Amino acid sequence: MSGFARAPVICACLAALLACGSSTGSRGAGGGGTQQDAEASLRVAQAQALLALMVLDAASGLEAQRAANPPEREPDVVYIPTPEPVVDKMLEVAQIKEGDVVYDLGCGDGRIVIAAAKRYGVQAWGFDIDPVRVAEARANAKAAGVEDLVTIEQKDIFTLDLSPASVVTLYLLPELNVQLIPQLEKLKPGSRIVSHDFDMAGVEPLEHHVVRLPVSEKAHQVYLWKTPLVRTDP
Image 1 (cartoon, rainbow, N blue to C red):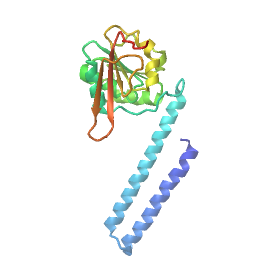
Image 2: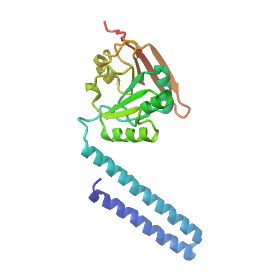
Image 3: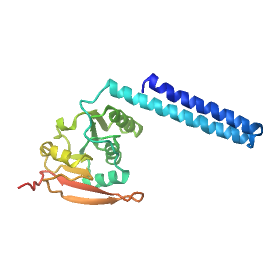
Image 4: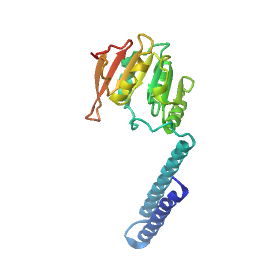
């Protein structure tokens, strides 16, 4: 957000603060409230204004990151983070073991590769085309203390050589899973591919699990394939 775009919002925040201070001052001077009420209301207004400015600063920072390091093209999907219980199930189904290399295609905030590194001590790579998600994932890996195991790169996943991976995780759309098949077929025999919610038309999954979250009515699907892929196409 530019300085010109920020100015009206900042003015609105300041106006709200002034209005709150004026009204609370009136109540404290005999308008029906106590001085404590007035001070509490003013603190709430100050906190709300500060939060609004912090959100603006964050938005400005994200725009700056995209402008400095624009993606090669627009992302193929809208970013929706995988719920933690689904992450747990995906890693369980993948049967990650010592020596595995995990690739997450469209890694978002990095939660899958971070969880894999923390729990199993494996090398994990996250790839995303959005520079904002890349920056967020790198920061999250550092905060989790696994930056020595987790590598995050800004890449177009459809141009990647996936052959170094032994585990590949996906949360894409069905047609994008299908688009990845030629790359996935180059994985070493016995490599595992795990997808959240979406299957892969023309390829028979080895396992299909349903994850139900206690706070959501939506059932999440987890699919597992192993290489060599079993094609069901005629």
